[in-house]
Picture 1: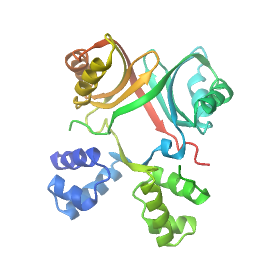
Picture 2 (picture 1 turned 135 degrees about the vertical axis):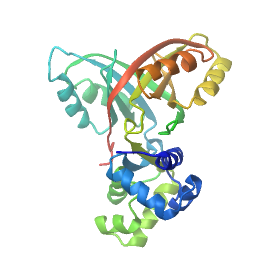
Picture 3 (picture 1 turned 30 degrees about the horizontal axis):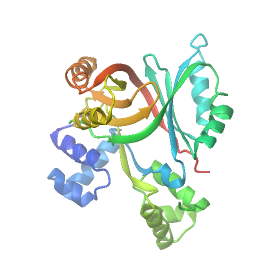
Picture 4 (picture 1 turned 90 degrees about the vertical axis):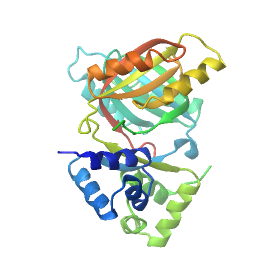
Length: 152
Length: 152
């Protein structure tokens, strides 16, 4: 799909402030509302914009703990990735799954109400996942920056 | 902390997949009047449970083919060095996410780049020159998946 400077300008503003109203976004990007609507439709149809989601703040729902669990899998089993990920999807406290090329194979983002709840999830659900070779945890203290913005 | 019923959880789940759904559409889907759906969404927003919007884009289609997660350990510790590091790292446009963590590393960063050569440029010129930066581990992102989380 061809993307021109107008698309890039729209996306730059849209990514930086996804909650902007359509009218404000059109004004920032310097296009008419009709052009904006047409461009966004086209970007969505072309798969460039994959989703526009509401962000849930889990802490406000009582999930105070967030841990990044980094796994190395037993790669002697060719089904290790698929089976691990399928099992991880069944754990409700897993809010994100990422796969990597590097020392880490898979990362799971896990939330819990408190440390006791985390310990329970960790022991009964996480350690029960198949094909784990190694794992290490990074506990989130604070998110300093989080944006989907791109230097377009 | 806000109490949620099953309808609230359904609304949150739907909005976390498509944040652009209107109160009318959500009402029809879950058997609510438009004003009743609107009031529930408003309550979730006011409680901070819906914390904003996030646009998921095909970064590769926009010319950013490489996403790398970096684990960064600071060489020097102390309040001043954390503040200096954070102030400098959030200003890098290629750095989308900065998280202060506890564990093997002090910070997790998500970095976008056009290709591996571009990533090397960002790493050498921008990341390795950050104040106080010590050991850095890089893992190249292959796939990512957001899960609905514990919404019943």
